[in-house]
Image 1 (tube, rainbow, N blue to C red):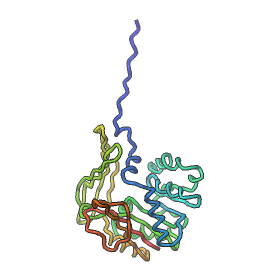
Image 2 (tube, rainbow, N blue to C red):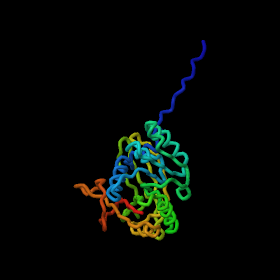
Image 3 (spheres, helix red, strand yellow):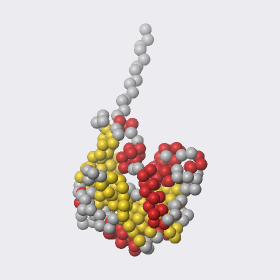
Image 4 (tube, rainbow, N blue to C red):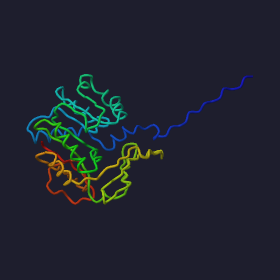
Length: 275
């Protein structure tokens, strides 16, 4: 009698092993539909016209660029990122989902935002605090000067920022999402230099985890510093858009111009710079 064939048992994969960190990131922290609506609405209020040509610096998966061209056949988007891996993920998982006619109006460029040249832009963004990688005023001013030069004569530049006393704490913030928990970890902060090192972790219902899915080393810039450096770079006017609150005192996702802000423990805002 011949021996029975050996049974090959497949290793059970945890939720963490099956997860895609880029999908998790976008679900936890991005809402490109809202972002594009906010950008376009604000631009129209400022310039009394529609923005058509959009550039997304530090674009990552370029989801905002893909959302931008969904507005119509006249809209064009350029995404720039130095990481070829995340750009390729964006091509496979975001750009490929667009109709062919929309895909051709998205240009993804692997390159450094300090050296890439693009056609004149209506609206340029640096979101997700990405420009915090520039850790001196000279470096930040040089980037803002590049942004200024890339814009049309009436172009507008948008950046986001965060702050408040809790931004300077070494702490973890947990947010429950559909099927997982998003953990924002401020692992290290140096008050003398405002150096901050942050991680993003994900935890799943089966107990599995993805630790340090993303790590960032930044300078934590303040609102007045950013506005001053934008002015030094040539921008004529800057406006800070502050988030409103719901009935429970939590952020409601609605951003409006604000001269003073509120002494919140933690806040997120946009700065809109006009050329």
